[in-house]
Each structure stands twice: as C-alpha cells, then as structure tokens.
Length: 590
Image: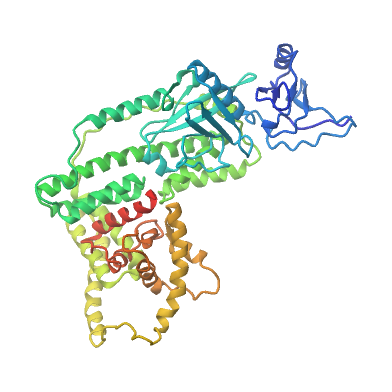
C-alpha cells in the first residue's frame, strides 16, 4: 500500500465542506486521548483548508511526530493532494471564524462569513445590521483602508506607518496552540502604546462594531483631550502671523499627518535660529506647534525604538517566526531612511533568515521562547527637563550642513549655495567652541568658495542677453526638443509614484526610464522637473516634491523648481523644508 508521507496536522470534522477545524496532537500519549474523545467523528482534508476533500486517518508514532494521513485511493494509488499548507497554523482562519461567532452570539448578534481566495488568507464578516469586517490572516492580499468596513490584520501583516499615524488604533489577530485547539487573541496596536492582546471573551460588540478594552481606553482618552479648550490656530491671536510662521506650522502639521518622522525631526532640530527673529506673538505660535511636534516625535521614536529592540532580541534568541514578522515592520518604518544602528539590526535579521530559511519556528514554539527569554525591562529613570543647549544644537546643525554641502554642492544653484553657506556661517558662530578647528576651517573654506563664485558668475552673465521665447513659426531650440521626451517620461513615472504616495530618488527614476531616450544628465534634472510641473494645472501638487536626495530628504533644487512653478519664495532652508513637507503631504492624503 502506498502511504501519504506528508505531516498533515489540521483537518475539519464532519465532511469536506465543514468549517469545524481540529488539530492532531503530535505526541502518542496525547493522540490516545484524542482518539477516545473523537470516536464518532470523521476527519477530512477540507475544501476550506485548500485541501482535496479526501478523508483522513490518524497516524500514531512513538518515535516521531503523529499526524493525519490521507487514505489511499480505491485503486491503491497514492493521494495527490496539493494543499498549500498543512501545519498547525493552516486552519487559523477557521479558528478565528469560530471564536468570532461565539463572541457575537454572546451579544445576540449573527453574521455571515466568507473565505475569498486565496483560501486561508482572508475572512469576510458581514453582520446582520450592515456592518462588515475583513480579516487579513497573512500578507497575500494588500489591505484596502479605503473600503467600507473595519480591517483586522493577522501576524506578519505590517500596517503602513501612515495608517498608524492617521488613525487611533489598528486591530490585530493571532492564534497559538492549546493542546488540540488554537486560542484566538485580538490585539490593539497604536503608535502610543504597545500592542495589547486579549481573548475574544474580553471584547464587546457595539453599534460601531468590535471594541477591545484597549480601544475603549484610547477613544476615551481622545474624547477627554478633545473636550479641553482648543489651542489657538495659526491665524488666531493679534493680527496676522508672518507667512514664514504659517508655513512652518503647516509644515510641521503636514509631516505629522503623513507620519514622516524625518521631516518632523528636521523641522524641530533647525528651529532655534528661526525662532530668534520672530516677534513675541509669532514666536509663541511657533513654539506651541513645536511643543506638539516634539511630543509626537517622542512617541514615534519610542515606538520605532521598541520595534527594533524586539527585532534585535528575536535575532539574538533565534526566534525565526518573530524575526520574519518583525523585519517587515522594521523595514516599513525606515522607508524614509534608517540610522546606522537600525541598518545593522536589519542586516543581522536578514542574514539570520537566510541562514534559517528551512527551519522556521512554529508560532507556538516562538511563544514559548518568548516566555523563557523574557526579562522585564527596568523602569526608565526620569530625568529633569533641561533647557535646550543652543550652542550644541547649532554645532549639530553646522555639521549636518557641512555634510550636505560636501554631498550636494554640485547640484545647487549659486543663490542656493550662498543661502546654505550663510546658514552654515550663522550656525558656526553660535556654536562657538563646540565646533572643532578642522570643522571651522571647512566652514571658512565654503565662505571663500561662495565669494569666489559670485564675481565669476557676474562676469559670465554680463554680456548675455535674456533668452526670448521662439517666434511663431520658428522651430524650438535643440536643447528644448531634447528635454521634451525626457520630461514626458519623468512625468509618467512621478504620476505613478503620486498614486501610491511614495517618493523617488533620481537613481530610481533613471532605472524606470524607457529605452531609446536621450541620457538624462545631472545638469538637466532641474530643467526637466520645471518642465514637468509647468505642464500641470496651477493648483495641482508639484510632482517635483516627490523627487528626493539619496537620504530621502528634500532635493536641493526643489525651492528653485517651486519658485519657477509660481510657489512663494521661501526665506531660508527651514521654510523651504516646511513648504516641501506640505507639498508631499498633498500626495499622501490623496
């Protein structure tokens, strides 16, 4: 007799169409108890498991793992079932359905369940009062946050940081083994708190749908915060605020709304010199926005730090299941750039997974490992609040500007270069002895370079007449004709990026250019983007805002492109970053 050698751990009870799942114990002594408890039951490779619909038998071993076994066909031929997954988690969608059904019945409510393809990945729940939910058990189907109804995410499904930034919480679901059963847990994930897991028995159902204890607390806190007197908006107060302050506040709000941590951090870190030149009323408004932004930033940084700490611990403790789940979340948080330490942790996690591709721990084993290795973190010591050290902040800003000038000076127009060097000189003067002698020499060197470029540029441009548009009927210049196909291709690429709310570097744009086009030279980049944005409606967001430097920061030529498209000329680099953050957020809201 030809035997099935696949280690099938899950089945359904009754017939091939059943949605009642069962797990076979792996130990012989447990299987004896299991058989006595299920003497009257039949086990099937259920269609809702993605199975063949054939009947299964239990197979007992004393020296290895017990499992279900496909019965051979009537002619003795082996069963050719192509069920995609046979492990203990392969029936989790049915266990989730069963747990949710029991929870709904406790509240006198009923629902209709469906399992769209791919089988095991999705559970659709339609309640009798018109509410609906979609449960994503894995990442096979991308969650649609715009669809009507709630979304619940399974293990390994990473919510986009923008989603977490834009809503108070996201529901999660997971299962772990309890003998011949699977326990179902509902989690409440938010940026401000660790994910809190509870069984369905602790959840309630309201007119708005599922409500966990953590979600109830979050909404209660938000309601209490909303009942407090609102802080005055940017236009409140005595008289109109300067345009630079309005732009700064809007930039901070836009960066927070889209969850762009680096934009918020840059605006906060560079604010000292900006605040110095403001009146008391304008400064109070800017400081109010800064206080809110810094609180938001602290919450996000703590959340990101916790994710990377957990990932590093999972690699160290060799918990492959948790590494595979955590690396997706960690990578999504660093799409705008990562620190050297975060790069190191991600590299270690990827190396570990490559090494253990064929030895993944099951979720139950990972849960046991977590309990064995768990050590409560010591309570963080509260440090007394200190006033910001103006000189040290300016020294850090000066070093950042030096690095940027070394990296991007050849991309900058003369006025942009002069503006950056002026800001560098100002920061260096405030920094005082916090800058080392070699750094001061580099600051002085950039000052000399700017002074040398100014007269050279004046002499070069003195005899040159202003370019006039071509007369009617005359052909356009070869340079213009050469840029037209490039601008059209770049516009198409950026429109695709705009549809997904993502940014691109020039290297990524070049990689997507269709073959046969002229080479896109670095000196042509600004002209191409100006042409792209001039071809759009005046109120449309600037596609050029989606083009960033290699560090996912604002492209150095963006202020010049925005000015060419009719946007207000920013006064200083900080205001330019704020304008850019607002422009990027217009795509990410769409």
